Length: 121
Figure 1 (spheres, helix red, strand yellow):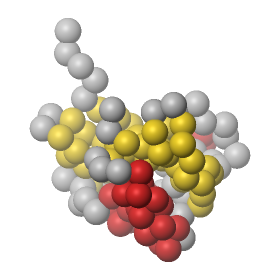
Figure 2 (cartoon, rainbow, N blue to C red):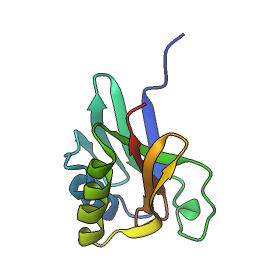
Figure 3 (cartoon, rainbow, N blue to C red):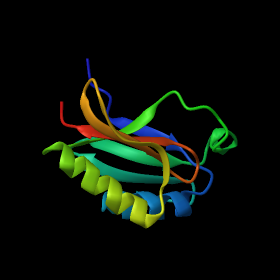
Figure 4 (cartoon, rainbow, N blue to C red):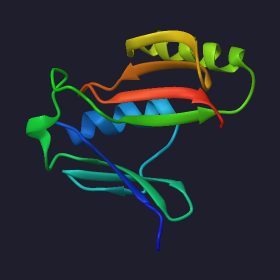
């Protein structure tokens, strides 16, 4: 059976979200339309932004999933990334702390979607 290969995030404004994620992750989209933007994140795997369910893409909507970024290196690498992202003005949901899987923190995008940084498993 094939593995999941599309990770879709609901956003209110594709242009704003594209600028946010391009800057935060240092990547550029490989497909852009007014309501859908895709980024190649690995061979055959897309991270995409879509305004198709934008009525749910408001910060007050509780989130039950997260965009994950696993970072190689020691805990200080995660702390350094946190400092760089805070300097960009991201909204912090959880400051850096140690959890069962290592050093981690959580920020949100402009629509309230959660982004967790953690060490590589």
